[in-house]
Image 1 (cartoon, rainbow, N blue to C red):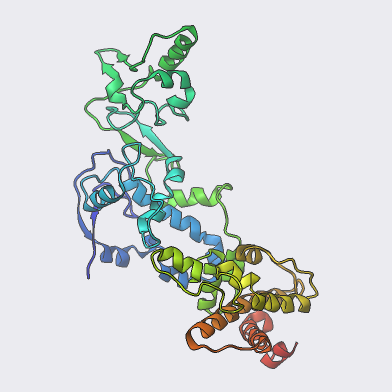
Image 2 (cartoon, rainbow, N blue to C red; image 1 turned 90 degrees about the vertical axis):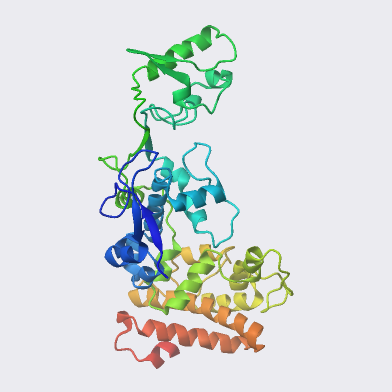
Length: 414
């Protein structure tokens, strides 16, 4: 199957619209498959994730790259109003209060790709500057089009008096030969204090140039050219200290272990493994019975419970921390366990490699045992599970360069 995508005319080298009016422009249909072949660096797909080693994964900022790439669609949405994909998104999710962007999707299923894209809209809009031309697509009170704040926040008294709070600039301004006249649709006459605010408001907007023959435009503040590109957005997010960093990423993706184990630990840290609570959330109309943890048969099965709070899991973790001579306080979430760099076996390179291997091996053994009891009705004793943890952790650690020349049986025995 060949998938096609509508592309406008003003694009940079990455296939991103540089700068355009809200009414869009001429364009044509371009094959997405050809884009993947010609510009595969523009799409950070799961295949890229598979080929990225741990150090590159942490340093390049996988999360930031994903957010930067989704910004391209947020930029193109109000520009390509005649495209098919814009019509589909608009009809399904509606239009934001600003009249340009799509609504933020909150309650769709996990299969909705536009949900992830739209949830980045608040961050994206912080880096957008509106350039007034005819004023037909920019709201007078709510949008930020003069200065760094909206007029509704600068002049709340006048905003409350206005009878048309969602009005656009074109509806409140009249263009004469040499001047602009403003009608803010106030509900009553102004008192002295409000009159002073009105003078301040007029002083701010008096230098605005209105061009009835041109369309309003959006400019990108993260680049000197005021043109959007995914790279400029990515560079800004990478340098911004306010962007949160997913701390377990370093431990998970730097470990030399099978990819399926890394993915399991990653999903557990994000609470996305297919335990009963997550399956029930994805299938709310399906009744799952029984809902208890199959390992201990005491409490309802959830990600944090099965890996940390189940009796079987507690026993495995207790053995590990007893082996490291640690007094352990059980964390509440898997995220909290994976984000802390314990020095359980020491500070050497070998100790760090072995510790991460053991921790991730426990996650894997618990998950395998859980599936074995559900699908094959086979249960293993605690000693057997611990022996498997030691075997897997030793096998994975032996691949690391720090254990080069050390026989596997010595790692297992020690």
